[in-house]
Every structure is written in structure tokens, then in C-alpha cells.
Length: 242
Image 1: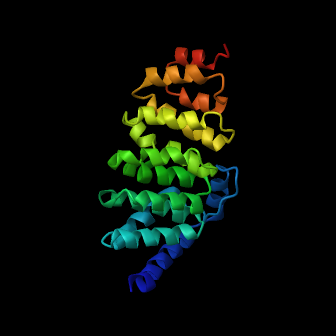
Image 2: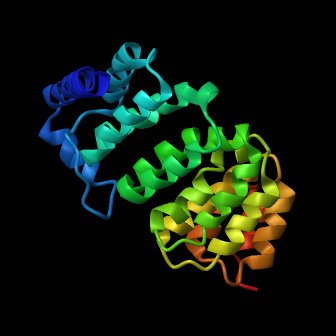
Image 3: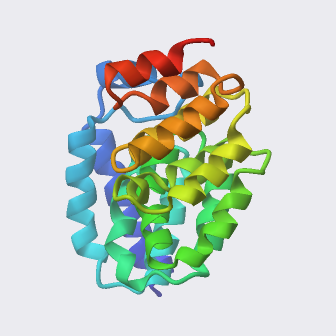
């Protein structure tokens, strides 16, 4: 009953509000952040956040499975703002997350993630939260780094961003970076470079040593990102070609 009636109603209301708040100037501005063409309504992020918060109040008492169903329906539109609502909703379910949810999350990355913003918004907090709750899942995330899908490879790195910022999963971050180290895709390079940068907040020495060890083969895009938070003297040493 829920999926056939209320689900359609909620999705319809969300779409209507997004259309109402869309404008061409925002749409054009949004496109400038991406190399690939993206589909969007043209709604400011703050407004999307308010819409997500409003409709979360309507769906929060549903079962996890029902909310997952709503999220998939939003993803199926391939419109950025609807994907952002998914990224906003899912962290609220962290207490209900189970290890098998990772299979669903992986399938969503494969089917629906098509730009860096969608990848990062989903993985930073949803997948990252799942990993902090079930650390044993890190081996499966490591396998993502070996996949051919560019967004799954980036996801392997950016899913560790929040844990890394808190000082966790350092060796796992290095393992994933080892796999991605010479990848030619700049979206992948920026993903693992960002991971190393966040890990350097609490593990500067270890990350710096890793960069120095690998700087001859690490793409400059990733290297620059990895050392961004380090003191000038260390950045200069890392950037020298010797």
C-alpha cells in the first residue's frame, strides 16, 4: 500500500517543490563545476537542504526498507538535486544500518552516481558511517578500488574521508591509495589525494613519508591535494622532483 500510493505522492511533492524553486541562472552556474554534463533542476543547495529536511519529517517513521525504496526512486530521475536529498536522508538511518546494506550502496554507486558531487555526498557520510559502525567491511571497500567503474574507485577513497579526519583507518587508506596510485583518471586522483589530505590532519608524519616514498609515480594532481594542509617546508620538499 505504501509503495503504490504514499510513495508516489511524496516523490511527486518533492519534484514539484524542486521545480518551483528552480531557475536557469543557478542551473548554468551549477554546470560550471563539472567536466561532464549533469542533469539538474537549478535549485540552490541551501534550498534543497530545506526541502530534504521538510520531507524527512514525513518519511522518518517508515521502515528502513521503505526509505531505501524512496531513495532509489529519487536516484532513478538522474537529477542532481534528487540525489542530494538521498545523501541528506540516509545518515539519519545510521542506527539501523546493517552490513548487508553495503551491497545496496554499491549497486547505487554503479547505477546512479555519475559525477563527483553525487559520489562524495553519498559516500562521505552514508558509506563512511557504515564503515565506522562495521569496520570489517573495509575489505569490500578496498575491492571497489580495483573496479573499472571510475565512481566506484573514487568511492573507495572518499568513503574513508570522515573516518580519516578522525584519525581512523590510516593503514586502510594507504592500502586503497596503493591500488589507485597511478590511476590516470583525475577524478580518482583527486579522490585519494583528498583522503590523504584528511588523514594528514592527525597523521602528518605518516602521510608525508608516504608521499615522499611515492612522489616519483604519484600524479601531481593527487600529490598537491595530499600535502595541502602541511607546513610550507614540507610541501616544498614534496613538490621537488629529486
